[in-house]
Image (cartoon, rainbow, N blue to C red; front, side, top):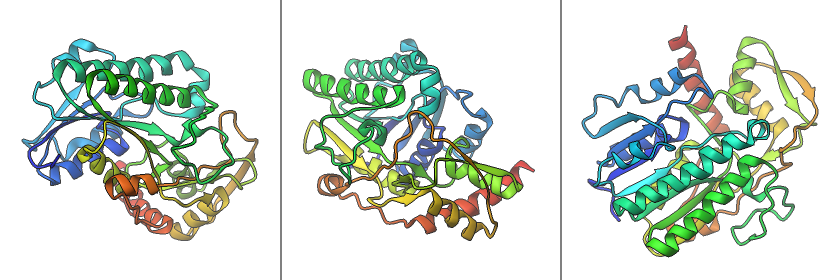
Length: 323
């Protein structure tokens, strides 16, 4: 479908990825409804800053609400044309400490969103899955055809469950379900608990950064603008009813190289505190994005250094705002 004049619901739309997506969709003449419960996993004031510049836009509506509340979901507009479901409890390590809460929010919450879509006749559903579904898989780069998934954290298992629920609703109710497996998204507005943001703040403050393992773990870091490109293409995709697709950078960066790139861009040497590997962590992530390219023209274009430079500009300005 074309995006002009579409009304798109973004759950979790006050967060890192969701707020960037909202900005982009508004620039394409879409109407955007953001549903976010402003959960205190990190300071809700950060999310409020993410959306503040859009609150006076007549094509933007913010609703503070929870995907676990069916009354709120059923009270949303009946003319929504697509759902981008980003809302979820985030984080591999916290999910190990509180797996039941992750199951409730991420699995039941996704079921609720699909039920709402069924009831309102919304037939385009884009779901934020995760590279964590692949678990420890030495066969890289990871392809969607690796059907034997062995997740190693409760968070990852909830994302597998979300993909499977999507297949059920696609099969039974003709909802087009596109599951996007995101690979380590970074950039301006990144959550403060994630490594690049956490490391940058500690480096700027002259504090030690916690480095788990020997620095050889590798991640397929994907710049947020490239992720937004992938989501936008998935909203418009109409060639099949159910797809699960990697959205990454098709490149890997070691933890040591990530730190050295931050040092280079920021012009500050990091102080490192080496710690053991953490349960639930995987040694590498690496996306094969050829399917996304074939289905909807996805092509990441931001190098890791360019992305860190953009992040540096943002966090420097952010610190001025906070001061």
